[in-house]
Image (cartoon, rainbow, N blue to C red; front, side, top):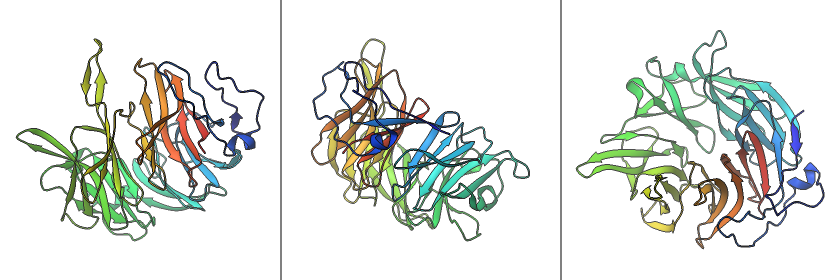
Length: 374
């Protein structure tokens, strides 16, 4: 059975009493007190859930009933009850040197992609559809067999359309590097290669709808590299629409429906206290290409996620003393940055809003943390 424990609030903010897992999962109002540098943060109610190995990725089902967790470098899949946090089902899926990826979750099944060494599928990338009630495999697609040729290639980033009908992969290495491939998930046809005429794709592709794909893009010109997000149809090379960024991005995330794109720029704090790069984030309007909001902070560990209503971004911000990692909510309308949690020398990853927007989960040192933000 997975372990469900009450997490401790930061020092000087100890929680009185012990709450049940069900009570912790119920929405509760988080403190609205302001945060001062170096001060430990107040927090809403939360729960930590341990799974086999260290959790690598977690995602909500569309109705919030389930949470799917990949752990132990993608080998184990655990389905948790989204209300109580209790284990529903578990199975071993990938024996891998890399981490599998959860692409989508509807109310009954989840689409998972990963690499396997299990005979007779040695070295083949598989796309699995998993039943959320019992973790049984409903369908299986060998992605490696869908490429026009069979190069030795890794699928670095993957995405699936909102209807689960189309998929997009960004291979790494070999002839395929810098291009994206799209295909129908359930129709056995070769992948369609989409190449850039003036640069290369990199990073996480994302579907706006079944036909349009957005992917980070790099072009070289006389002034150096130009970074943007390129939007194209999933079946052709043209036309491309570019939303150009003002600096090199460290994290790029498209909002649900593709109205906005959040960009956190790369920065480093040098040993003498100087900053290399741009410690800011922008929200762009995809249709106009204009900046609609600027935040004077940038994600420190390259993680960010949009709320379903596209009003908030959850991201990891680091304090100036570089010792505290903090999960924060960015309000796109008001520009407010609301700190939720700081952790000493911690790694906070994979933020995901629940469908209702009242809860937020992330990976904290190998555990799944579910936090009430309502």
